[in-house]
Image 1 (cartoon, one colour):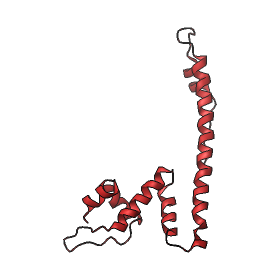
Image 2: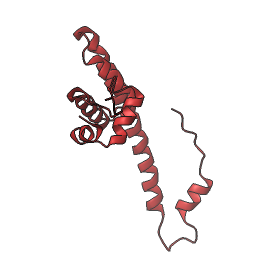
Image 3: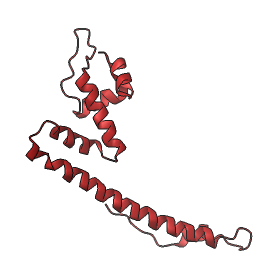
Length: 136
């Protein structure tokens, strides 16, 4: 099938298919003599696999690793757990960061009694608060 139909069947746009092909996630998409790409049902399954992985917070690199394990021997599929666990750990870290940020922002909102202070505690905090460098 041509790119438009393939994109529609996979639930993505044509640029996504082209990008996945450039990234090597879709391998060996043949071209007709006219230059048009010809996508297969397997290509559609791969794209859907990638999109589901992204819905779980997995990166394209993670999805690529998992794609490589789809047809691996059962004993080699342990890598799938490692990839998923690493993403889970990252999500837990981000959730902790978000909770910390929410708590700090909620305290600022609470301290801001609109019209009761000549200065705004929120603006003062942003202007004079500690400068924190994030590392990853």
